[in-house]
Image (cartoon, rainbow, N blue to C red; front, side):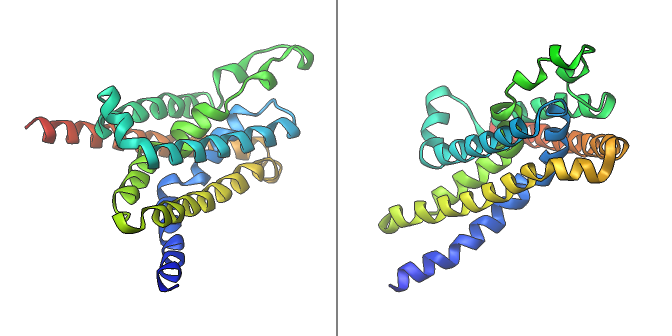
Length: 218
């Protein structure tokens, strides 16, 4: 019973440690830019799918992360650099255009195919929500699970991940309300600001990955 109570106390610690790295609020401008021409119903589906995909990705790396990395010969620095490059491309689009390439098609509303595009897995779930930092945190938590309480430890980490995903879904699901509150010009301003911040995050990811490469090779 004491072990169970101790495990419950670790759940908020896992969530608090993961949430700032996941930072769902930073995904909201990207979500708004990519789903600009979608219906409200389709936006909610995209938010739900992105959240479910992010949970599945993080859970997979919790159980199989080290095996996946060993199987494909991938290192965490490699994941950081790759994720940083993807985020950098998206950040440039947000910073200089304010929206994705697919959203810039000039045509009648009935002819726009934006609503049929699925952005939920990439880039919303990965690398935005379940990025290199989140994956590294989850794998770190998994490595700290005691061997004699492995099942309970994994359950604790999974619940912590689930709580963060619920926050992420709430943020994405309320993005439409945020868009109405800020208006078109407000959204453009926020998108460009977040594009700049995402550029900084991407550069940091790439720099951290390169630094870890240099340290490992030296």
